[in-house]
Image (cartoon, rainbow, N blue to C red):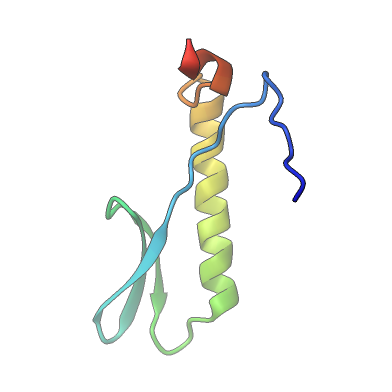
Length: 80
């Protein structure tokens, strides 16, 4: 098995889990693991592709907000 090395300068990116809230029969809500709202879809017209795209856009926005601010520390600074 090959292991890839993480650059000392590369930030460790957090993993976010997403889930669907289908408690309303007419609306499907995409939420983050902490319950935060991400997107809402009509239960009749929702597609897997729409849900995946919404999750990708949300994750990218989280990275833009937090990587620049240093919220996600590199492995080197975490072990220091």
